[in-house]
Image (cartoon, rainbow, N blue to C red; front, top):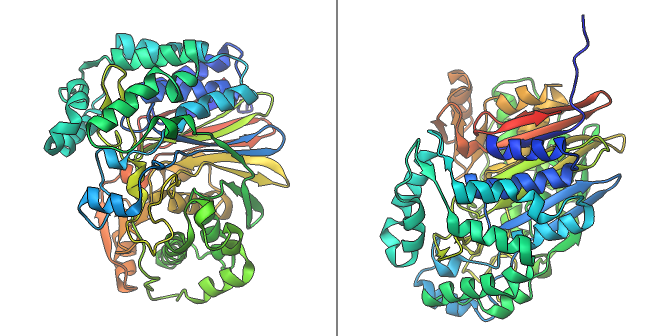
Length: 517
């Protein structure tokens, strides 16, 4: 029997057009970083409800050792918590509109990553993105409902969303979507670089748009933006070392959950296993809300949450047959694009980019087609919370690209979109891959659940056996069944590293594609 042939380079994204862009770059001799950036640029055009040119970016890169990049924007330096409370007229941050916008870190991130590892220039890598924006593409039946939901969500805030509605309100399945203003942005970035965004005409238009609607972001906020290179956090689960980004991301939350679980023998598939996984995750999510935010504002370092005595206290709080309330925690919804790439030289890229919730704030910059993020919604207006709003502060970020090593060598590149769901997706995937020895495709396609922080409701795909969900209810869990392949459970993608090549897989909940050569 002929041996199976594995690709020597691979890319996986949540949209087939973006995956084909990345594969094309690899086929033309580009490396994994080139492919990842090109795919991301295309994603911002063909899936603007997942990411885009007004959002943030985070990445883990392996080039023989791990490197972390935090492309997180800050709140306006001239805004205060008291002013934000007065402006919002509520006890919580606005979900949409100009006050939810933080400085977009994504465009700077593309150039920072390319400067360090790229072998192709931005203009070359942006060719597909420009073409799809200027000439258009056909909207799929899977994507059309997301545009319809955006129209419904933004309808009541017409004063902010006229520009957005002018581009997306009439999108239907099979329609041809053109975004010429966005093409102009991409071409300007290609010709003039990131200064056009942070100190030039694009930034001027961003500020003018936000000021017109009452926002506080100033030219100096954009000019002061800088991404940060950061050492990844590292923790062991079974025989695997997991690498996650440090705060302001919730990478430590995923690691805390894995380290808690590492102290238990994982039961076989069934009620006892899912109960233990859910309870483990709840402890970590509650600690996220207590401690995780901009590291400059944290009362204790992230490493404290991975200390063995701290983890032992969390394990002791878990009961084998009863759901425990670990305390109040704030929900962090999501709408994000995760992608990964690997090449024949062993360069690995785990990258995630987002406007936060779907299209973001709903504020689009006229003439430039940029959908501005609503990452500021992550902040709390309670001054006693770790993630309380403050001037020039980075909010807690749900975005957590990941890598895993075995014997100090790369084993898995993985991650997921999904806001609060992301640490739970990491937990469930690694239980399948490490404990069960599952294939990446089988692990990604397995039934999945997510937990709502605060209410601690468990949303579970109805592919789980009915008896399992009933068993969780008998343990005291509030369980709500959902669709069979629910996007709310995250779009995860993975590339497993092998001596024979790469095994890549894409989440069936997305319209993505894992492609290799």
